Image 1 (cartoon, rainbow, N blue to C red):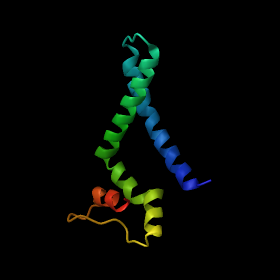
Image 2: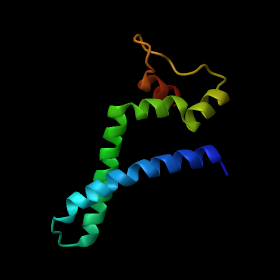
Image 3: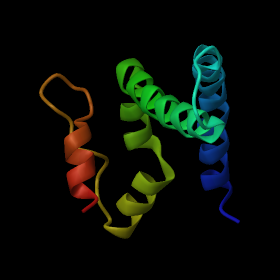
Length: 100
């Protein structure tokens, strides 16, 4: 088993749970014809909101440069760490583009 991947998945799952709990609580007062739809909407909104929060807090940028996938790509291509932009921060687009 790839323990680094398991660790990343556990971290994402643990961070998503509170977002889901808040969204689920917010939707609890709403009426739906089908309760299953409420669950699907809760999961969708939670995932989208989590992604926005991750982007706003810098978690996405951190993940792009420290993730298992990025390290694997760097080893495979015998490459230097991600391109840095003029202000010294990691350019997320360059990391993404270099993985293609």
